[in-house]
Image (cartoon, rainbow, N blue to C red; front, side, top):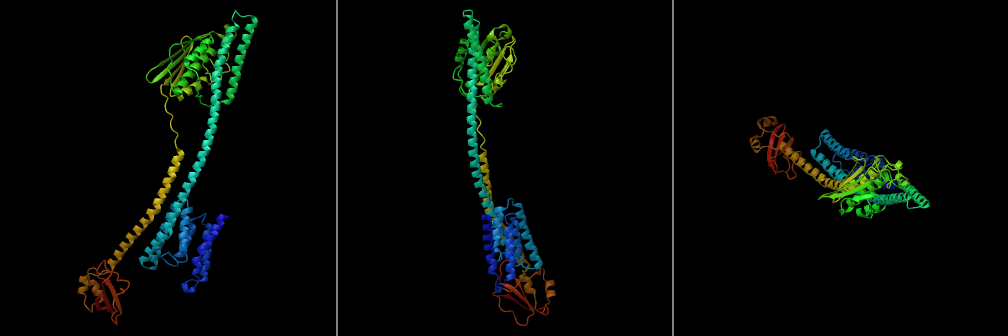
Length: 527
């Protein structure tokens, strides 16, 4: 609705100059008014869909009235449609072709009607000031509006991205808490199952106590399986390893495993302390190695070694082959994995644990990679399993996120600045080129009407025009169009008087040659 009201008001405004020319004394008529009103109505109607059509139609309506293009009836329409074309047109190539076509058409009409080139220069000047300049202003306004809209769009997008990032962070934190809970509790339940299994076969306990220990072992194994299933639902398939600290040192971790009945030997003491992600990854490597040893190689000896140098730390967890599950009592079957991410290659057996999620070493490798290190695992010669991680002493700094929104906004600003520069230097360049062209044509025109002083001095009264032209080395092709305003009256009885420039640059004085029956009857330098 607003667009229709705007178009109606625009049409009424553009019709005002046309209505003012309705008086026949001003060279107008009601027929011309009716044609102009209808043409302007059609131009306004199609200006939104085809912005260049109204401009071309207005120029076509102006040229028959005057070759100088700037007419009283359609001058306001030229300016308005030039601005709207720049404001609404997406690309500039069609507009440039239209401007060139107008200039060429004006030149062709000038030659066809044998009028002065000065009118064509006036047309070019009117084209530059009344059409091209408003078009450039419209282009600038369009780019500025685009910049403003881009800024608001980027702000909205950043708000949405911040909200989405907050949601992702909340989900990631929940998943991290779930993963760490599983890793920690799974490890603890595995140790509880080992200790309960030892009590189950202890000869110092009676049958009731051994049965209760067996029930405790089975309950711990079932709790581990249920924990794995629950956390498996919470975790995504492609989720990266959690990076939260477990809250204990490697010495405390191995001591707790040793107290639970796992034969753990810490080769290196004290274990070096690593900052940030490297320290978290070191703890998880040792924890995963102990958990896998408790699951896949129960009863085997486990060796934990941490060696450091100036730039990196090397952690290695080696477990023995363990005791075959069919020769051991309850605990030999294992309590189940202590991690929902346990690898398919278990210590000792080299096979994937039953019920394992198959993600242990995959998730651990992701955690080590995030810390800037590498993780390897291999079977040992005696049938055991070795887990090795190389971690940097200083975690690599995270790469900054690419500021895509800032780049887009900066690009939009550059486009606006370029269009503003074009809106300034393009009209100036056109005016400069037009001035040079007019100066060149003026010099050429003056040279065509210049008569050498020596040739003028050799002329004699009574000579025919043909003999004068033949005796002159460089007879000018065209005389001046009219006598200078300060020239005295022409002699009486002359058939024709011609005026030629006596100097190439000055307008006066001039030579006047008057002829009667084709012969020179009078000559003078005027004024």
